[in-house]
Image 1 (tube, rainbow, N blue to C red):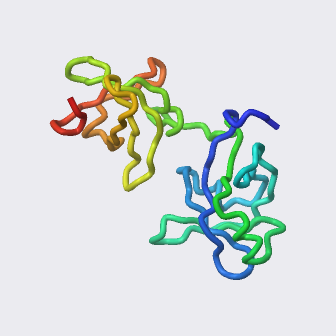
Image 2: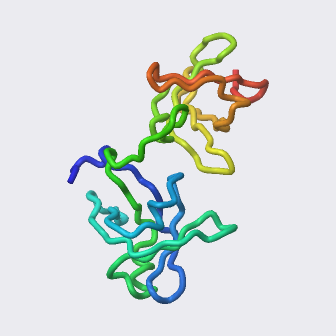
Amino acid sequence: MPTDLNEWIEIGRIVSPQGLKGEMRIYPDSDFPERFMTPGERWLLRPGAKQPESVQLQSGRFLDGKGLYVIRIEGIETISQAEFLRGAKLMVQVGDRPPLAAGEFHVMDLVGLTVINANTQAVIGTVMGIAAAGNDLLEIALQNAPEQTVLVPLVKEFVKSLDLESRQIELLPIPGLIPD
């Protein structure tokens, strides 16, 4: 089991208990529903813990209209046990990422990419994180003001190209999207 947290990927966060019998609502950070619905070993990083621990996912289901999953973990049988896990992260090892089709990417692979203006080739900044919303948003630290970040939708209207090999994203900024 890896001991460095950089060897792990967060796939979801427990946000609340669901009912009285130990089920939990989890906000997904993964586009792979089987991670929340297929029984088997998962890893849980409790709030304040330094290492994930192995847990057994017993079952899971998607809550239509909420964007959440409800999961059951072996040994968690009461609302108070589930409440104790609020804020815990469900994790997988980096090597357990599913293979992707051509043109697909893992969202966390975007962190650290250089963002350039597709029109001028000037460096805009660096991707610092991804915010989940209706569309994923790139959180970009600006080159000329690294303490300032902007959020840019990860959609084809703004992203001209995304090249993981060259570690860069070409952005088509519209007026007002990126401060001067």
